[in-house]
Image 1: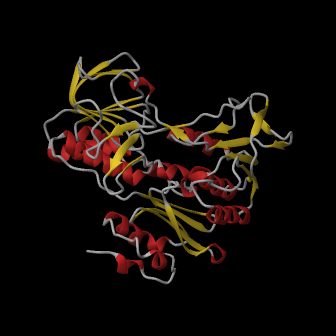
Image 2: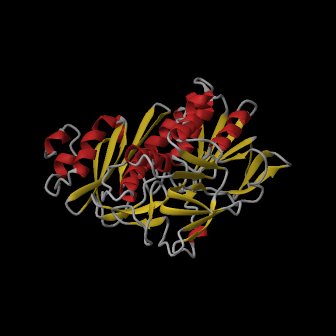
Image 3: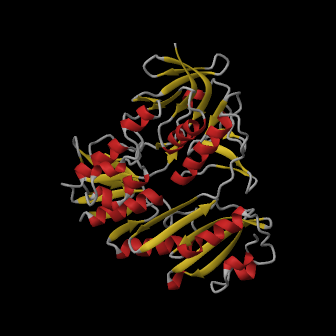
Length: 412
């Protein structure tokens, strides 16, 4: 049985950052990365960007590591395999090909998977998801001949794919179950701002509707909506959410909910096992709440901190996460925890009518997150207010004043 001092399940941002961090400190310990993809590390962020899809930059720029990096850093890359079982008592992970690997320290950096569409006919050619490089390749090939596309769902993927497909010259229709874009994560003014940008960019939007059936033979020819209408298309993009691929951990003793439960050190409920990245449901010490954060910068930082803890350097994870997307003449930014809830005070800042709008979410005395539309210049100040746990309980008026300088509230 092959044995590694550090075994990492997941070859994405978190897993690779962990391997990098280990090698910076521990030159002799054996390290292996198990990845369900055959590709070395690539940028998932780039997968939904028009320059990549439309061939304006070389395809290979998507790769962030090459085979040489793994060899030079003595990191075994076991690609095209997934983990199927974990025995925490014996410290053994079983892989999809039957291989058993023993570990000293284990990191579960599984990422998340695209939720599959279960509507009748969804298995036809032309129904696409965007999570992996191979899926991106399929979309790139298809847009060369496609004329009409339908996007199922909103969110970052739906928005970015609408931008890319319109730039590629396709006719695009977006179908939303909700009353407005990204309900309820965004408030209605924010959602309508995004919708206005989409419509201005040539995207048709059908709200409060679902698809009853995907039409066609082997390939997609259209959809039938639940109200009986039929829309023709030769391409469908599904952006209906993600899930954590953790079923194989059911009998491992690992505590889990939506993701793998972790403390502020990213340690799981069994010894010598940590988690990081999109799959982690971790104790956020800044917000004092359990949080999942599905973005690249957060995953890399979690991978780094998890690796430090795997090497015995007790380090709490403390980080204000963010994600920004630009398209359709609009910029959308999420900072930290933007989930709505009855315990949250929402402070609007700016004006949707003037095209510049922020929502700040407050729990108790502190800011926990914000959504920004066309106001990216305030992202740094908002992040610092969260990071420094600034008491804003008596500053609601100032927070809501778009002319007030947020920097003045930051304590050094």
